[in-house]
Image (tube, rainbow, N blue to C red):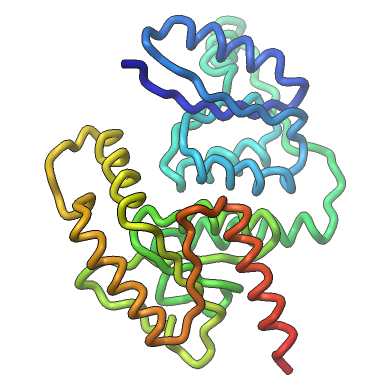
Amino acid sequence: MSKTLVLHLVSHASGELIEMLARNAVAQLEGVHVERRLWKRVRRMGQLPEILAAVADSPGFVLHSISDTDIREAIESACDRLGVPCQFALEPLIGQLAEYSSAPVQVHTSSGSAFDEDYYVRVEAMKYTLAHDDGVASDDLTDADVIILGVSRATKTPTCMYLASRGIKAANVPLVPGIPIPAALVSPKAPLVVGLIVDPARLSLIRSARLTSLNQHENTAYADFDALRRELLAARRLFILHGWPIIDVTNRSIEQTSAMIIEMLEARAAHQP
């Protein structure tokens, strides 16, 4: 049985070098099926939110050839926050060559691209979303544009990442059985709160695959169908109780879910004084 390896290749140029490195490296692995996504000419910070949204949606190994310090640090810190491996394609070669030749490594500190207002909005949104992922800092959500609420593996993180790529500060809060929701969600000053639900059979498959990827094969309530059905029913009741809009993400793409949330934000803004 082949193992699927998701490769996200991020290149500052045409992508030929990084593709060649990835292709030759994967050729040394036995029984691996590769799903590859390539981004070319990544030279502006404003390009990163869309890339990171795709990484969050389909976690895998990120290989990049970005030498500009600001962009490289942003990619690597974001991947670290998402819990996905990230590697600069020319390491450790550069370090070894520098050590052998006693030559200092030249640091590229800026991409040199012009920054417009939209760039700063997207970068700030991505910073906020990364800092408020999976319940982190859930006691301070007043600056969020939207809070995404849902059970585990209901596509909260990739949805938030996609929204951030559009300049929207999105925080996500997981619903965990037995743990109360943060008080910030029911505050009079709370931003838009959107609940995500998914078909229990579909969610059971997703969670089972997650356990397998973590080499955890024991039976737990995490992927048990009946337990999931109860968990999702409790989530729906909570959303209805507080009057929060509900989106069923079972047959929707991240883009479709995000588009619905953007429409809700626009409608909310139109009715505010």
